[in-house]
Structures are given as C-alpha cells and as structure tokens.
Amino acid sequence: MSEEYIQDYIRAGKGVIAAKNLAKRIINPGVPLLEIANRCEAEIIKVGCELSFPINMSLNEIAAHYSPEIDDKTVVPEKGLLKIDVGSLFNGYIADSAFTINLDEDPKLQNYIDAAREALDAAIELFNPGIKLYELGEVIAQKIMNRGLRPITNLGGHELKQYNLHAGPFIPNYKEKLHNQILKLGDAYACEPFVTSGIGKVENGKYSYIYRFVKRVKKNMP
Image 1 (cartoon, rainbow, N blue to C red):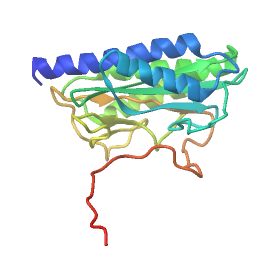
Image 2 (cartoon, rainbow, N blue to C red):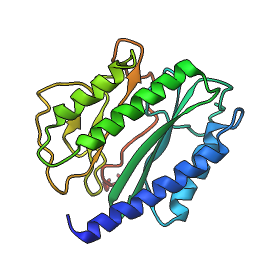
Image 3 (cartoon, one colour):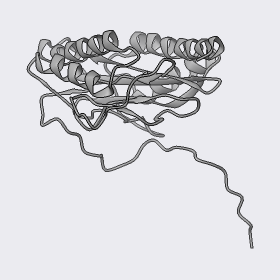
C-alpha cells in the first residue's frame, strides 16, 4: 500500500470521526433519527468526503443496518441501546466505524458495550500480517463469552478495497476454520464484533432500507 493510499484512508477516517463526534453531541431522547442522520451525513460531506453508505441507526434488538427512511418518525427513546454505524469515502477508499450509546446508562446494557469494546481491542492487538481470520474470531468470541454473552455468528467484519465496502474475506466473530485467509501487509479490514444475549444469530427484517448502485443502463424507448 502506497503512502498516497494511506493518506486517502486517513482522510476518509476524518469524515467518520467528524460524523461520530457530531452524533454524540446531538443524540438525545426525542430527537428524530432522520434529523440525526441528515446532519451527520452532511458533516461527512462538509469535511470533503463522500458517503460510503447511509448512516445506520439501529435500536435495541435491531442488530444493524437500519437507516431512517423518508418521513421516518422514529425518535431516540428514553432508554435502551442505539447503534450508530458511519461510513466515509475519499478517493474511493473507505472508513467504516460504529459505536453504541447506552441511552439511560443501564449497567446491564453497558455489559454489551464493554464486551464489544474488549473484543475489538483484543482483535486489533492481534491484527498483524500472518494472522488467520479465524484466529481473530477466536479472541473476539472469548472476550464476549467472558462477560456471559454470545457473539453473533452471522454478522462480522469484512475487507475494504477501493470503492468496495464488502470486498471479500469475512472476519468471523467466532472460531471457524473455514475463514482461514491470512492477513497480508497492506490489507484493510473493518473488524465488527456483535454481541447478544440471544441464540447468536440474526434474521433479516421484513423491509430493506439500503440499496447498492451497480451501474447505469441505457434503455431504448419504443
């Protein structure tokens, strides 16, 4: 990876940091999710980056990938967990980062946040060329289970490439030797521990909120 590419990743990261800092300031009970999303996305553009995906704002049992739709009336509740996932892009290079807010500082819910943070920190410490992806999953799962919780096994991290958010290899949140790809110098990944007290798997929701643009197609009109 050249120095130029590294600087592009750093610039993309600045967009994510700006959006996350703003979100932490404006998220309060009663504030519409759509308002928060619009302001945070505008902040990414303000610092000279683009969106790599719409901001995700997922409440409680919704694990991930909920984005407020047009005319969405959902507001921040008084209590519970709110997960914020932000993506920024510069010259095609992507920063992808998330955090969780414990809205009423419930100690039981804080355990979920602490488990995810400890799992992420342990994975980052191990993140070096030569490490196999399932080895990251093993330490992630162990840290989560140490707190009496379970990792979500059908969500996880992913490789990042230019203009490609989900580029290929998957970082599992548990030890699964099928994910035996080896980290190489210059690779970029988003590492994403997910924590639950449930069975450890998520199901797709009834509706889709995020779409991917593939290509424009010219259609001949009759």
